[in-house]
Amino acid sequence: MSWLTQRPNTGDPTNFYTVGNNKNILIVGLGNPGKEYDLTRHNIGFLCLDEFVENTAEMQPWIAKKDLKCQVSMGQLGENRVIAIKPTTFMNLSGQAVQAVAHFYKINNQQIVIVQDELDVEFGQIRMRMGGSSAGHNGIKSVSQIIGENYNRIRIGIGPKSPAEMPSEDFVLQQFNKDQRQHLKNLTKEVTAILNEYIFGGELPHDTRKFIVS
Image 1 (cartoon, rainbow, N blue to C red):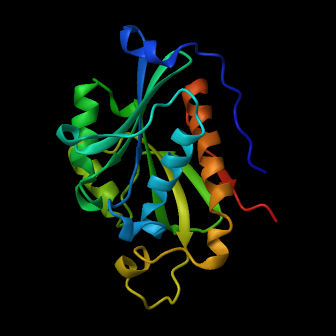
Image 2: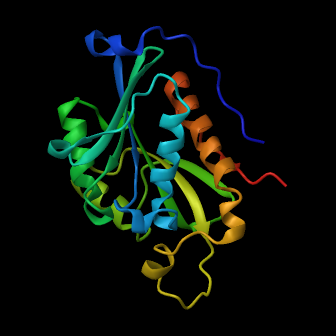
């Protein structure tokens, strides 16, 4: 069952801009901009960050930052300034937005969390790890080529591919089927819980989570 880590009272969220000693955390949801990509498997990163921002009182509404090539939401959570972004570069160029924001806010790779779809993981599971290969994911490939591989990843299962002979690039751009859509709320809540564990615990859990509750 999904659960959320209790957050401490952080006071007025508008004051976080003046705090100099806080650790900056960058959370990146991968996806493609545009309504035609809503509810597609490749955009699960966007869905999860929308849930996180909407249900975290300290996070501010999304704003477009053309110079940083993304939509941004920021908030003060405990001792950490959290910067959430959704790149507007399209998936294959996601690394450009990650690099721009990380450079601007002086964030190192160990303080970056990428939320992505993972075709090699079964729908109903979430896996976490530091680094690793792209496994053919063009968004991850772009990020790793630009900033390196040593960042945190939350990998959300969208597999297995069906039908098996369908090209992967076509499958990931399809919308979730009717049955899967019924579980998307559980999925996004579980990712919010994982993100809170990282933000307030200082480390990404390295287990496998199941977000489908039977």
